[in-house]
Length: 253
Image 1 (cartoon, rainbow, N blue to C red):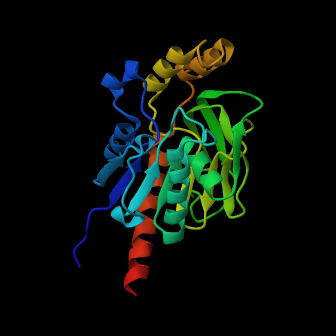
Image 2: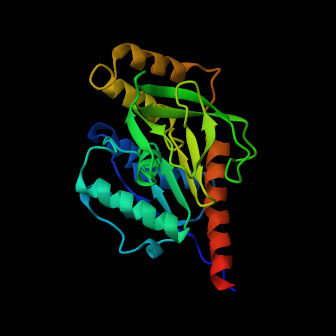
């Protein structure tokens, strides 16, 4: 049987700021570059869901990924409600689904959880997380990992079917799994530290309080802190391929 290329549908819920886009591209571009750096040869189709551009069906791609966004999942826009329904449809279909930041949050809301602005404010810069569950999707090669973060909203109530994979003192529900086919992360594996520095600087004193931004920027210039992009992207791509293979095998038996 011929081996086909896994096609990932990127549901773009946001886009990089105008000031940074020429150099860094869109959030969808960042994920494609991230997987390319990991040596993956996935095919991609991007859907700008914030502009109400949606796939015709969940079968249109083998796997799905929801990006970050400047919007909140409780903003009440029609496209957000439509995306929540699409999440439920993908979950029912059993296709692999990744959610990052806003994607992490909207999957939780779509499946019965709750997201709100966190009482302790913003999490920016490099954040350390501990892997807390021995779930099939937990990334067994990891005991802890450090990634860039950029969020004020957090998942505060879990859906009944959610399993917590990773946590920190600032973000209790930092990585979640739903069954064997949905994996979500609050942090941003696709953000390089250079991009994060420029993003935090751009938002300092405008969106992010100056003291919080300064602490985040300090973490980004601390040479003793390393970002764990490589093991996290390997975790993500292994998840996509394994779940897709398992679903394919189930469909033909």
